[in-house]
Amino acid sequence: MREKSGSVEARPFASKQCLCGSEIPRYSSSLFIGDFSTRRLRHGTMDCLQAGQAARVRSFPHVEGNYALHVYIPVYIPSVPKKELTLFLKKLASIVPGLHIVDVDVPLNSLYEDDHKLEQVALGREFHISLGRTVPIRVHQIDSVVAMLRQKLQFQKRYWIDFSKWQVFVNDDHTRTFLSMEVVTGGLAEIRKQIHSVNEVYKLHNLPEFYKDPRPHISLTWALGDISDSLERVVEEEMKRFNVGSSLHKRIFTSKFGGIECKIGNKTYKICKFQDE
Image 1 (cartoon, rainbow, N blue to C red):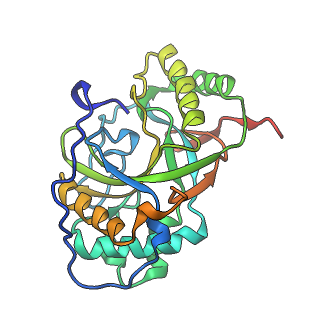
Image 2 (tube, rainbow, N blue to C red; image 1 turned 135 degrees about the vertical axis):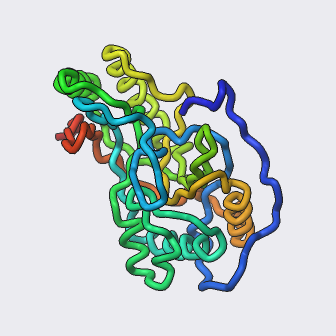
Image 3 (tube, rainbow, N blue to C red; image 1 turned 90 degrees about the vertical axis):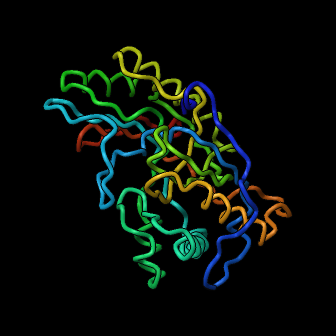
C-alpha cells in the first residue's frame, strides 16, 4: 500500500479503555493469538468500490467503454476459525455501531441473533488479497493485460499464507474504516513477488502501480467515517482479556495459496498454473 501523503501515520492506541456494553457469549483465546496494530493507510482496492446500503462511492467515475481491473489471490476462511470469528464479530456488533460486512454491505448488527447466518454471510464468501490497484482499463487493453499477467505469473509454487495480525485501516479522506487481517510472516515474501510482477504489467499499460509498501490483507468489516479510535480500543481490550501474548503460534488462521485471478468487468480470468500440475 502506498503511504498516506508520503508517510505512514502510525499511532498508539488512544486509550486502553474498553467500550464494552452488554455481555454476550464468551469465546476462546485461539481467535486472538495474532498480533494487533493500527495504521492510517490507504486501504487499496477494497475502499469504496462496492456500492452498498451506506452510500459508498466508486474511487473512479464510470466511463462508457472502461472496465474495472482487479488482480487478486482468492482466500477462503477454514471452518474451524469461522466459529471463533463469528463470536468475535458478534462482540464487535454489540459495542461498535455502524459496522458493515465487506462486499455484501449488510449491517453487522442485523445478523446478531443468528450465528449461522452471520457466519455464512460474513465469513463464508471468497475474500481477496489484492495484488494491484483496482483501475479502469479500455476494452482494447483487456487481451494484452491478461496475456502479460499470464506470462509473468504463469507458474507458481504452492505456499501457505498466515493471517497473523489484526489491523485497522482508514482511507486517505477518512471516510471509511476497515477491520482487516494482515499477512506479516508466512506468505508475505511470495505475495510481494507477485505484486512486483503485476506492477510490471501495469507499467507497460500506463496504469498506476501498487503501493510502495504493500501490506497484504483481507478485510471483514467496514464503517462510514473514521471510527478507528473506538475500534482500536475494543479489539485491543479483547486481545488483552484472552492473554494473546502467551501463545507460541502467532496466527489467526492459515490458508493455502490457491492461484491468482484477474477480474475485468464481470469476467474472471485464471492467471496462473502450479508447477506440480
